[in-house]
Image (cartoon, rainbow, N blue to C red):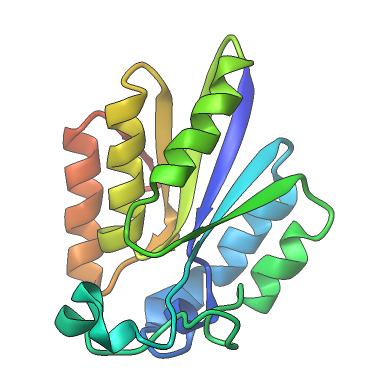
Length: 177
């Protein structure tokens, strides 16, 4: 069985930057270890905004500039970047919570495989992880999709848990919950 790891938005601004949390900072080492031990294709999403972020629909509802393209906050966290160095990975930049391009790239990968499973880790559980997990489940209903709760963190611990419950209800397997 082919395994694919999806690393969602493990960027500085979500770990210890503009929108960072204590829980996000605490899970970076676990996420880096999962990446380092993973043997297979890795897809990495990166939240990517431009200088006009505050003028966008998202920026008007969340007026905290973050993940501005080519800034330190936009970059992958150093430990995640280091874990990826020797791996087979592809970066997918996205301007919103869920990535249609991720669905497309994964779809092309799945055409070549008889049986696959996907595991998601990353930030934020309650926004981008859940959005991408649900997009993938909608497009690939028979695909085994897992989310590793130990390698995710939400905006708050309560919303992290709520997102995990939502994914469970939508037949996404949650590990380490």
